Picture 1 (cartoon, rainbow, N blue to C red):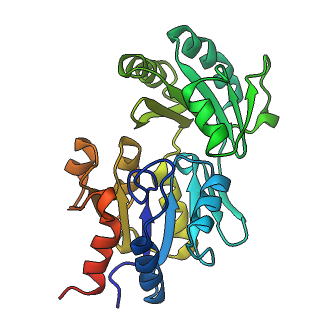
Picture 2: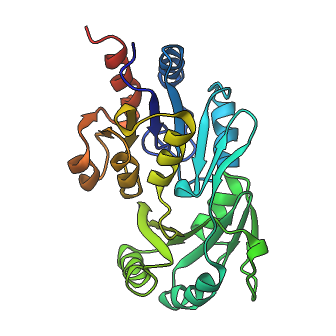
Length: 271
């Protein structure tokens, strides 16, 4: 009997080594084994769910029975039929008030819906990546925002000092409207208030009738802290940020060395 019923894992830096790197074959094989033993697998990422679904399909992960959550928990779907299980949007009025503040800091701002990115810097580093790798449609931020824009997440890019300043402002002045956290080097994410990767874990626990104690989670970044906190047992890959390694119950080898597969293989065959 496999000791966990739900396996929730981050993607970039945890399953996949680089932003354009394929999922290792050992991950695919190990996921197949734990699923045959009755466990459910969920990939929880900052990426758009549609993009993540395309990647896992391309790399040979079985979609049937797989769950995907994107935008740091703001949109969760069934991978096999794209049914939306849970979805949240940023407050449009609060976003309209926040945008001039972010622009004044001089950082790249992207507002993400599934398949569309609105940005103040169409030729910026993150926007170019979203267009080239995630195949997103890039548009200028409209002068007037409406709920029809359906923004799940805001991503900001810039120097460490600029991002730290922006996060401090969001937490201090907009703390009841947004969550803000670092998500990768040179990037931070702003999500609807109360919505984190932990939100996705709890939604999936409810959907699959799984307890916190039956949940195993893997991560590497600051935005994975709520992911591990929502699980009964949290594992940090060795390349994780220090804050996550401190929080985790266990560590495994790095993403580059297929740490998730290594940990799961040890559970499958403790000998």
